[in-house]
Length: 566
Image 1 (cartoon, helix red, strand yellow):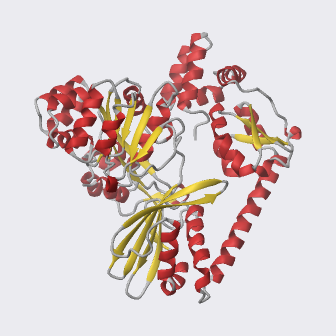
Image 2 (cartoon, rainbow, N blue to C red; image 1 turned 45 degrees about the vertical axis):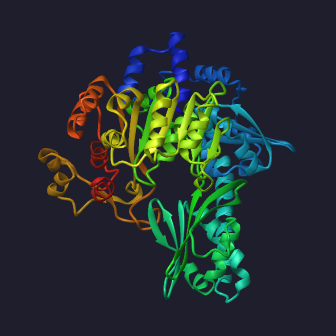
Image 3 (cartoon, rainbow, N blue to C red; image 1 turned 180 degrees about the vertical axis):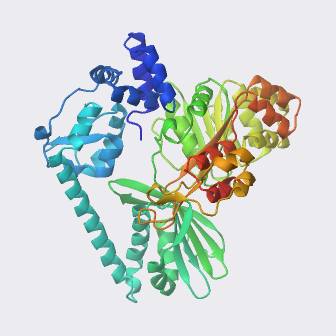
């Protein structure tokens, strides 16, 4: 992960350039050597010594009003180190170094880490005082033998406590005791959070019942729950319906609800749905746990695509659409956009179904079709609330799209989603919904189409024995490329649970409405002609980008086929 965000790096580089403290040739070389992203450029120049670290330290201190300090290992109070999870320390380059009755002092490299003060307070039960340190200072402290030993010991204790607690709970569920149903339900929810699960499925069948966790996009059966769940299925369903504030007497109709539980010092929300079936009610819970402040520069966009999105969402008006199937990360992208432009000087309003994350300073409204609170009715009301930015969770019908287009043409920035296969298909979809081509061309600024794929596990990467030049040509490689590309797969290890995959990786195509594409839209060109017009201005499809991931060993051929062969 980058040391600084692109936003912070942009600010530093601009200040240094204006002060003539950057060597232009070295800046150009740093951009050419990496991704070109500002965060990558700044880190490269810092590590190479082409930028004075103390100067960057001073710029950041002044820009973000944070006290500067330089720490030595002997100054660190070892009592402070275990108060913050090791994962947070390493991910955010933050080191706790002092503690008293009221305050925990934390040295941070990136000043935007200070926005996580409330999260750290809930974890540590201390008020947080941040001080700014340099990258080299952090790395020196983190690698110090004394500091490393304390942190490693704390992590081992935490893991042991977790394993012991989980083992104790699981052993009790073997008992034929219906009084353990509440504890059983709690354990499922907690276990899902511990394993990085995105969705929980609880399902009855004729002779079995099972719990499945969706981890990194893959459903995994949790066999340890099956016996107890089968014996107490009705009790488990009733308990979860009560927690979700649903009607326990209603077993004929689907119901939606929500569950909130405390976890690691913060509240975590679960979106709850129960559906009647032949063998009983099925439950699916979506875990709404994540970082709603995730910035655009951290979701895996190329520099060109990042710049195009930032340009579109920084404009005073226009329509930005994000498309893709369910579970492709559209919400993450939209929240990243809102986070980037969130400013007290802007009136930002959202209509969502449901509201998945709370955004400070944003007016969020949840749609409720049962009472007539639909997206189009909320959107009409928004236009009387003097907004600059409007987010509509999804454009579902002709009425909503008409209002959205008119809003984008009358001085509002409008963000929304559609369900289409790719960016070009979105234009066709808008035409099919009755939007005239001239209004599409005038109102639409940008279309993002995306998929979420499973990257190969780096710990067990190997050449793919099933891959052939013919299989590569089938997914779009040229005959010449197919002879040189060596695809990779994960063969399975402890780190990835034997799956060969670890984590999620977004694949994005960003379609900017350029004059060439606008002309094609106005003449109602066919999709291939619009694609050709877009490519004249540098547009890359998801397939082209993902083939680059295959070439680099990030995706397997099988994963490419799963997410992109339509």
